[in-house]
Image 1 (cartoon, helix red, strand yellow):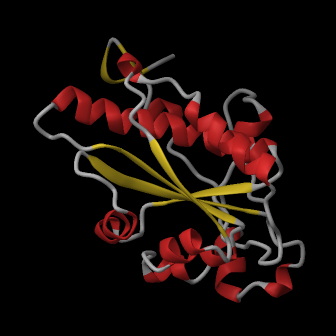
Image 2 (image 1 turned 180 degrees about the vertical axis):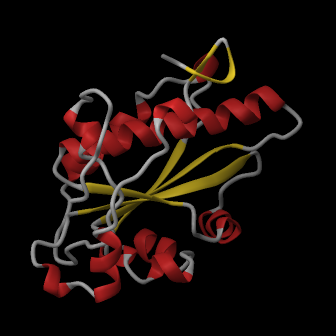
Length: 196
């Protein structure tokens, strides 16, 4: 796993979280594990208690998983079908109600964040994907007007034997984890004045 470098210690679930591609195609996820990930999303903070986030859930091999796989872009379609499960997150879509529209997206992000940490706590790896055909998801699953598909979360177990993975996936999973330093993103007093 690529290393995380932080300025101070953070919780191990956060430090250990990364978006892998090298999944074990034989790994499965049981009902309790999948339900725990969904519960983590359900109990995320929600603006005004509107609870706009909805989930489409599929396990590898079932019709929901196969239909979600068919919507993936070429890059994700090469590795993601080895995941044990896909969870698509949808939320409100009402551009005429700016607050509801923006906070619906915020709620989806909060739910996804908690689901990623729960995934990590269970010994799985979560990889959020934006590379999919949203219109196809909405059509195939009958997502109603007023909702929009935002992200598909792949949930899988890391392959124990890297030789089972393609060279491209092995190389990509070995990339260092990098983020901008805090002095470039955390400000105080004025924009571009680093928080100290």
